[in-house]
Image 1 (cartoon, one colour):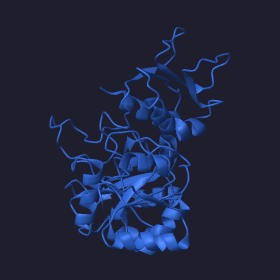
Image 2: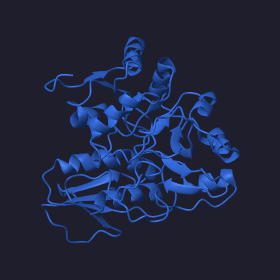
Image 3: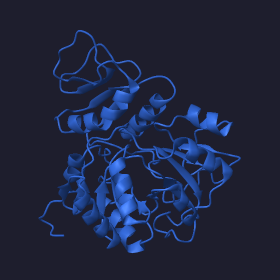
Image 4: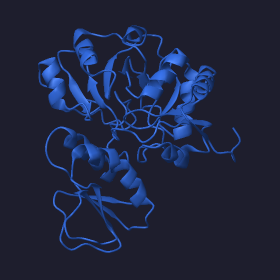
Amino acid sequence: MSPHSAARIYRGTGRNLSLLAAQLKRGELVAVPTETVYGLAANAFDTSACRKIFRAKGRPTRDPLIVHFHDLKELDAIAVANPAALKLARAFWPGPLTIVLPKRKTIPAIVSAGLPSVAVRMPAHPLFRRLLKLTGRPLAAPSANVFGYVSPTTAEHVRHGLGRKIRSILDGGPAQIGLESTIVDLRDPMQPRLLRPGAVTRAELERVLGQVVPLAGATGKKSGNPRAALVAPGTMKRHYSPQTPVVLHETMPPRRAEDEAWLFVAKPAGTRAANVFWLDARGELGGAARTLFAQLRRLDRGGFRKIHVELPCGPGLAEAIVDRLRRAAAK
């Protein structure tokens, strides 16, 4: 790809899907829509193709990739499932849940950060599912953005960040959920761990598994080695971050600087200030999750000195939104 050319955005026609499937089979990268955020996909069985993902994103190789597949029958060629994993699969797939399991030898070390485990998911987005079926092999795909920056929820977000690094983007419209998938570690089914909250909530996981699922750090015990491989993606302390500093508040202060942006969960009553924004007019968490990353991107380009964000409260989806915001605000 020429360094001066921009990625092309493809509509989801049958002809375009066949074209993009052929590119993936040749070891090329394609940005794809999912119900969570847009991903940057490569053939999960192809080491050189997956290495291109890390180069395009500027992603460290200690941060593993999620492997996406079309049908549950394909899981056995990728990972070693257990009864607990199959319970979750039947309850939530296709959908926004990623499960960490022992991997098969078919998965290259580059995909799993050299670890004997792999993160797997069956996505729900209809265009991505059609592309997976046409490609005929699992696809490794992290978020389709420059590493560490705010995740993309539209095709234009992808082109803005990676347009000079990749060739093709499949446009599936705005992401329906807007936050990356929930990640649960089931390498030991007797000790499940929630590595990253998402739209599949902790309460839902616990209901299906019939046991407590504690929130845990991605690396478990602190090794003291910042270069140690992570068990799952999206679990670094600082991640999803705009360039403008983010400041979090449980309650917004009444006095607000005019050169700083103020982002509320719900539309505040009686304010018309040009620097006041909100995630969802009525404060509904589904709407807040859907617009979070788009708003952070918008405010990052707004010339503000800081971005102040109100934290939602409560369990469920609020836990996932708070997780992303705390990583966005981390030093």
